[in-house]
Image: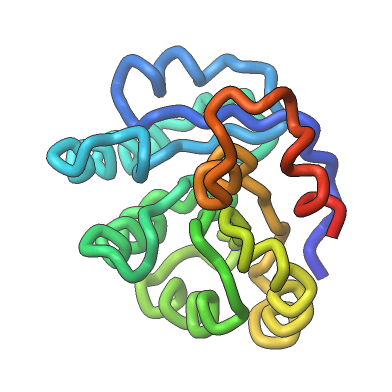
Amino acid sequence: MTDIRPRRSALLVPATATALAAARSEPVDALILDLADSLPPADREAGRALVVSGLSEGGFSAAEVVVRVNGLDTPWGEDDLAAVAQAGPDAVLVPRVEEPEDLAGLGSRLRRLHAPERVRIWACLDTPLGILSAEAVASAVRDVDARLACLVVDAGALAREGRLPPGAPEAGPLLAWLAT
């Protein structure tokens, strides 16, 4: 079983040299190095290299360092996983998890890429279907791969997917989904 640890604060950081340097000393529980939405496609290869070199240098003050990859069904997903395997962060954050099958075989893929066994999986539920499937994802994946450490809700992505109006007050419109 994965150790239970508090994750009160998480900072999402684009995988750029400036952002990674600034994030090293941030007093957060989790630092999420983003290879996906915060980088234009033309910069993703350079972002991968920065993450690998940055993690090999170390010096991050966060309790956990996580790499957010592009969707595993995108042109960048497999290269992102290879970078994660090489870099050996504490976890990999997988976006758009909507059903247990979205994570099926991910532990095997990480082993095939020679990722350290300590690299955990964070499953991001960032669509309405993902939220509705949270219990199934947590239950099924727990049986399949012990690497699953937590489920993450990306409220911004969830609001976009749910076509909520931009600037909706606080989390009000999301509360029904978040309470499921």
